[in-house]
Length: 278
Image 1 (spheres, rainbow, N blue to C red):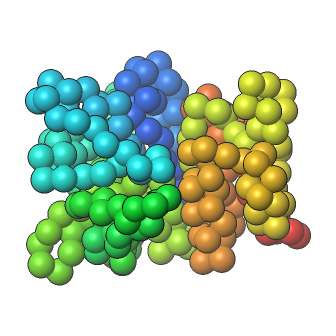
Image 2: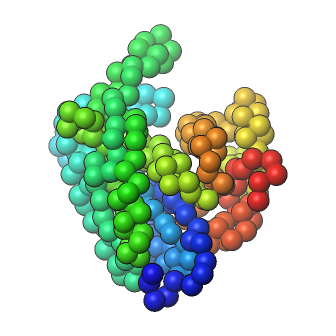
């Protein structure tokens, strides 16, 4: 146990995901990691999963590679996979860990291939065509023993969203999907998904239309009614699946409000949990 970890307290397990936009904003990144540091001192155990979309897009452009997305999901061919390896497991992961260290957070950077067994995402019919996403993966299993080992040493895993199959093929995996899978695997009490919107809004143009809390039934109705749309749909849909896997609360929030969301679910952002859950 670390010297500043409160004794005789069962640590709250949490997974935090943020995208490359947060990593690119030094002030936002340091603020988020400072709040993680505060919560870990109060007895929480965190896994951090980061994306790196903007950084990958910029690097791909310098190489003359086209960035392709279908229904909001990135298509990953061979050259694009190499970009993902270089940027996600390389520069972005290093940037997050060095920022964490600057906030006295004992972070350990990991490429997801160290703990995520993956399989290739199957073809999907989108409109009139079947789309092959290439080297895009789905999480099949999580090596929780590695996470537990790091936690036991007072460390915070910082994971780049890459997985590997039984044949040694690496895959690029959506960071929200990775965070959700890890949260389910470690039976996390909280899953925090950071987004620029700062929560689920009834009107995307009006921050005051934030919905503080949703049950799974209300969230599905909001998707059906078009209240939840665009890139928020897969984020919320995946969160709903993971609630069935035992995660306590899924938070959709902005980068400025982690501790408030952790201590008062629904006070900021949107907290999704089953009816009657506390």
